Length: 380
Image (cartoon, rainbow, N blue to C red):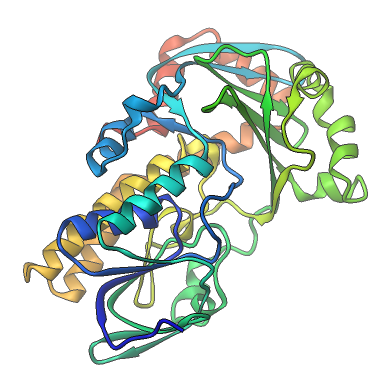
């Protein structure tokens, strides 16, 4: 047990990109921060592992030496329909590829070096409010903090589900998806990212470090149930109807025997606050890959929250003002991007509709540029 009576300025539940970036920024402000992560770094996550260049300068400002890592620079997008039709588009801002295994572990180490208390293999089981802030009950003891932030990803912890307002922040009608990720070696140009549609799903492929590629797909859970919950059978029967995916599944070198899988994934907007808990990243709303990219949105959310928390700790904002300002800025930054993701999600994985949509978009580069711009943010 590592409990003590120290009151941290902020406790962060979950060590994904949003939580780690928030912790580093608060530490740079001179704040004492504790971060709880249920896993042990480094570890893999189900994630497309493409990051928009809007985040490049932000990550470098934290101390991440991106330029030294010789990462693949991605400037071209290809989207295919199950029919085999391919739409190609040059990305204006572009992005880069990096595995979460590498990036998250580096950020966790960087946070430690800056004084953040990073507790791995540590699960938060309850939160109790008191006059000075919050008591956080964990599997490694009791901790105390003035402010509390959730960066716990797609799955909401049980203690959050008991908070006032949680039922208003969920959407039980949303479709359930599964996410499946492989790392492969493939014949695909390093500057290119591809999205390949199949019935009720789509699959992204792009290069990361170490001459590996991330192949990650989403599909409705019903597809898996229809194939006896056998992922291989589903891939052979459903994904391989797209000729591009068939080529990858039969010719690529799959580095790990088994994929990483997440289930019960829903895409809906939640809320940036539930009870006393500030939320960033997927905790604030599981983000469709078609929103631009969730990793940049999580990092941008951390920057918004870190700035407003600094104003709070400096006496410029009350707690009520902090909550209102963060909620307003979060909605301004992300609501339209998430809504665009919902619209695009309806066009993907629909065979005929997807094919028609791609063929129509091929006739207007201006429309393609506007859609891409609507799903990406400015450099921050």
